Image (cartoon, rainbow, N blue to C red; front, side):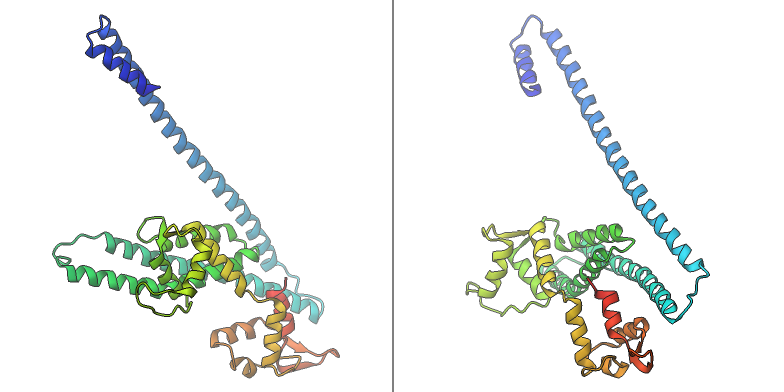
Length: 326
């Protein structure tokens, strides 16, 4: 409507209409009102966005406040239990509390490290230093180095996603912050060229970075295994993979790899060679030193049905139910 009004008014002025001056004045008045409306709309949008930010902050702060109050009550309580079972239960709760805080700190530190790396790479891509990048060879080397660096980060980002998913599913006290932080990392990692999508070539590189085996083939040769992945993310063969499809693909693949508590318990049982308890030496057969350390810290000493302890034995059944039970 505004465009039609301007067009009609301009034609009247150019045709020398007797009221040309009045038409021009009215057009200026309408144009000014339109500009004021656009400015007011933009300001309102900014205010609404800031109000939404404030409400989200208040909600998160309120949740964190309640959690901190609960934690403060736990750590200042003088309840030390009235028996072995009570003490063990309190130790378990305290261990879970320490794990929640440590997991959040570790996740945040890893996110900051990955985001710092991404900022450095983005700045490198955008740089235009003619003194140092004055040849095609230098530009090609810069791009190759970047692709290698991106591939090296794939595993770390996949680990971050796995940890974040586990914390969110376990109703971690900072789950909303964790989810937002993870999405920010995934968005930047997915879209390092700021296009909003991945080409098929870039998607293939992501798969290899995530340790999916894809045979090397000559250009133009069929890739049946890669085609199966494309069927999941680009069935219509648009030629690119959207962020939504890529994220859904990762979640689906991650879900396929999640083990049940029964699977984990069976794994411990196999390491323990059928014993009702497991020793540190048993765990060293298949677990990393860090995993062994985590297990020995959080597993309770094994007690047989008669209440007799096994000094070197750990209760893997209780541990599995506590950390991986549904």
